[in-house]
Image (cartoon, rainbow, N blue to C red):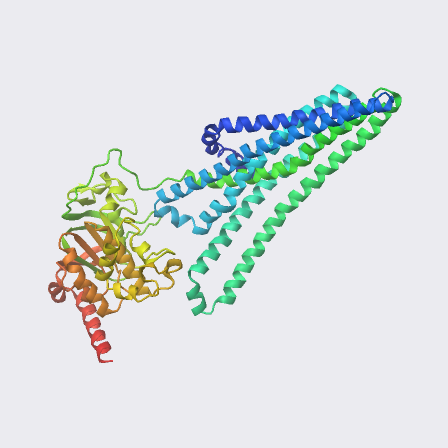
Length: 592
């Protein structure tokens, strides 16, 4: 139970997340709640009219015209209640939808602002669950939950007041079982919060598992893992059902128990009120009115379990959302950023030592090198630090001050947006969207013309292949470019980077899935493009680097050799050995 209390306390601490939005829409909320109060007030008048009619009928003093007048008054009140109910639903429920939209937009903006460290700890499925189930729970709590809670409190106080006005003793008898209901509800609510948190976490696991397997569907099929994947998903589903059943057990206890208490209250009133009516302490009209008010009080009693469920779900989901909103990027933006010059001639690495967050291993150790205009190659074995070195200039991870410079300006003094606007990084794993080829190429420049898109496509030897497709550049390529080959995806990603026209272009094994002939064709087409910019290519194919101005060889996170292609063949055994193996392999392929 202490764990339950700490979780509930943490959930309540997330309530300020909604404060700004409630303040922004306070007029809408005030009008909606006023309309809700109007509904409750009009409902309280109906039992008074019924009382007068019943008493008049009992004394046989009412005329047909008076009876019609009482009926007309009830009809008018019903019309007023319907109008006001429509008003509060339009105001408060629409407010909850606006809240959902606002939170979803803020969630996306927050996720986009976070660095890679965050995504190493949080799966895509978890983020999807937050934007789906959790946001819906918050919307329901701030919509129907808010209405039901307000209505229950106001109606309870008003109904009890009217009941006490008729007979205080009978009112005390009617509410006798209610403290027991409040105690049990409080105990069950604590357990409900804990169990619903587990449900949401399990839903995140299911969502992530489904996403990952759909994204890798071709691998699953090629390895004939359909059955094992299905079994695993089935087990996740069963765990999700079991967690939901535990929640349903508490909800199932709350609703029948609330109804039981309501019926006990009615039983006590029928017994006590009936005796009072027989003895003449209250009139038959008072007794009927009292029963009607009790029914009005019964709704808050029975709704208590439902409202409790809504708020507990909403609080749990809000706390999960709040954890993301409170997350901070490990990459700190400079207080007074300096703007980069358009003409960039050097990218300098100075005594850079780097380890990934929360990982003790040193990936780059005291590395120093200056990249200049033209082509520079990076080679090295697996784990030598090539990909890490490619990612750090764009500040995808936090780096120490005074370790990476552009034109002698510390990149930590430049805003991330300005820095990345001058650098295009193309990794080996090409990221494409389920859209047209043209839109994928022009993602960074939506205003690019058809001619500009086709120009960069020709550079990467994709223009003819694209035009041979049924819809040309308007061909939709499916999720993650599933309709394309690996080499085609890589070339489209490269074309996208070229269209940005960056001063610094970094290719991290970008053409690994492209055949050597096409690779040479691309490198040849790139040469005029690279004359006025810094281009860094990390690759295991040395043929790409034969014309490079300089090549560095990495090992253990440090530079063990550098020079041009001819120099490294003479003075670096690793480079010479790799070149020899690749030359033999290329000759064998040509003969075959």
